[in-house]
Structures are given as structure tokens and as C-alpha cells.
Length: 302
Image (cartoon, rainbow, N blue to C red; front, side, top):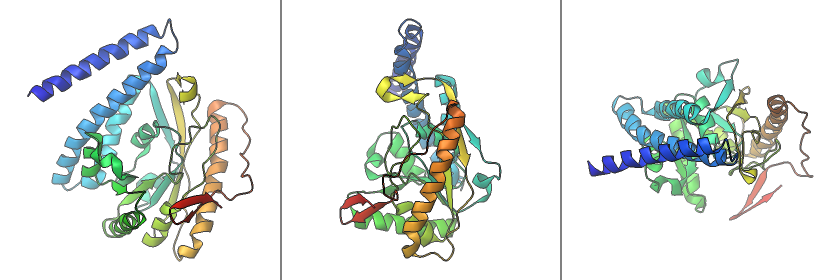
């Protein structure tokens, strides 16, 4: 009981501080960055706490595969109310509802992509995440209960085992997976993609399921940490046509990775130009093909 009282007091205190910062932003514009950052953090804490309960209830009801979808929707509405930010999903052919199982891949810009997942996440889908997140209070508990595929990036054999397990579950349970092939956040002011790692594409080939690219417009006009910009707004997201992997082998993964990245980059530039209402050039590849080549514990761009 004392824990619940402490938690309630903590939430009330943070909400009060957020409101003060929002009011201060009329005098000091940079205060809006702190206000929305705090509001987003509190929305995440509340959602993760609810997510633990949602995951337990849905698992008991036999619907555990959709726990991340349900929790994501809670975060979507909390963030819209707390920060005025949302992601608008363009999926004209209903791929999110009809393509299952699949490996969904998307570009990764900032921590705000968690909200993007909350807005677009399909049912019967789980994310992959670094293993260290599993021990985080609330968020880690929710992720573990809701079927997240945890990967130890420092242990290649452990990572391969996690991928093999994910491939088996995808086929047996018709469970989709969402992955960020860039492997980390780009924090880019302009529409660009970091080199792609091949794990998502190996997984799709191994499971024999399609790749579904999801492209999020560059939203540095909404959030750009280096300049303390954090504004309300709507960010467009487009779901592209599935890319089949039937008949492909490990030897085809490099080309599958390269071609998927190229399709996503073209769409990223077009979508960002539309969102920010200004022309944007396609970034140069600098002579590489945008695919990370693994060599032992090292990774170089090929």
C-alpha cells in the first residue's frame, strides 16, 4: 500500500512540474522542451505500468500475442493528450492487418519512435530489444511479459539462438516481429538512413516470411534534441508493399538488405519533403551499399 501511495504522489508531483514548465514556456520557449520531455517520460512510465497488467490479463485470456498492440494504443492516446504529438499511419492496402506473419522493418530516429510503434503497431506482433532492457523496472517487466525478443548484442551465439527461436515462433504461432535494421537511433536533422544490419533479413529468410518496410518521415521539426526542439505535431508514416522472401537463401540476404534500404530511403525523402513542405535531396551513399558487413565482433560498412 505504501508503494502505491508513493507512486501516486510521484505521478502527481511530476504532473504539477510539467504544468509549471508548460506555463513557463510562454516566457522561456526552451521550457517547452523540458515540459514535453517530462510529459513523455511520465506517459511512458504510466503506460509501462499499465502494460504489465495488460500483459498478464491478456496472457491469461489467451491473447498474449496482442499485448504490445493494446499497450501501444494506451501510449498513443496518453502522448496525444500530454504532448500533442501523434503519428498518422498511411496503410492503403491494410498490410498491417492482413500480412501475417512478417518481419516489419522501420527507420529509427529518436526515442520518440516508441510512440510511433504505439500508433502503428499491428496485432500479433512483438519487438526485438537489447537484453539489458529486460532488467528495467516497469518497462522491462512489460516487455518480458508481452513477448519481446531480447538479444544480447555482445554474445553472437546468444543472438543467433534468439533469432532461431523467433523464426520458429513466427512459423508456429503466426507471430510477426518489428525490427529497426539501423540498430541504433540516427538523430538526423535531414532524411537519411544509417547502414542496415542484416539480422532482420536473415530472420525473414529463415522463417520464410515477407519483409514489410515501414517508413517514418524525418521529424526533426518536431523533435531535435541538439537544438532543444520539442514541438507538438503530426508525423506521417507509410507502410510499403511486402517484399517476399520465398525461395531465398542466406546468400541472398545482402541484396535483400540493400534493395529494401534503397526503397525505404527513396520513400523517406519523399515523405519527409511532404511533411516539412520543402524539397530534400536523396543522401549520397558515399560509394557503399548501405549494408553492415560483420566480421567477428567487428562491423564495417560494405
